[in-house]
Length: 315
Image 1 (cartoon, rainbow, N blue to C red):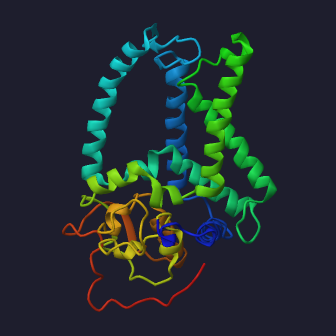
Image 2 (image 1 turned 60 degrees about the vertical axis):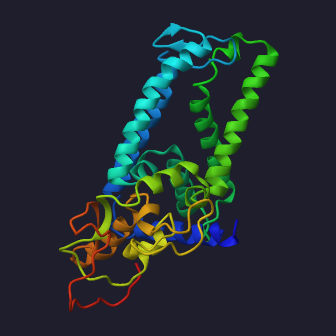
Image 3 (image 1 turned 30 degrees about the vertical axis):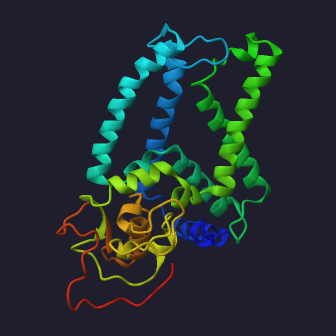
């Protein structure tokens, strides 16, 4: 894999610091997308925890007490019944991604939430160079243990810790710590590298959503681009939101080199948030918007002829 396929720690630091500055200006407040993500995070992870805890579905590799809709079943029977709703969900995902693009990556995927938690730790708890620091690493480790606990519920009955034999407890603990180590690596080190270069699901979704009817575009009633560069700096995928029909700026790991920025965009809205935070204090409409495309199918229509550019500025 080319070295340029993976972003440097400096790229992550610039993104974290830029988002910190945008979100902590005097008199500033949390952007609406922040609250949307909090709601999505709470709903998704509540569902992930409730399904095995309620007995709707669990593959119990401790004592074979597999559950389907609250009833004990063999492993193969549980798997067979699970495959039907799983297949239907994947058909729905294909249809949604084909029409709308990679919103699942930007708003639903648990890895996305891990990455944003890492961003928060770097920007809000780190030093000026946006490194985690001891407190940040401790919080990343604690969060990783929590993530691992939630996902382990799908495969091991928690009763193993008070009813299981010492070897069973040891195996469950090893699995828990292994999942926690992977989660910690994602939060503290891999971060958006996974989404940019390494995720097979991301490649699959990017091919499905190569031409969609939603995404980022230049708002028809928006201000001319001020060329402040904030949208580029804050983009977690290291794209230029002003040129979404252009080619990616660097090789993308396991992604295909012929893909354009629009298919790589995860529709997270970070560039729109940055654009709004630049223009709104100046009493002007933002250049970028996220939603159903209003242009002729192009992800980024050209600005109106003769539109004057604003001088570049930084927050």
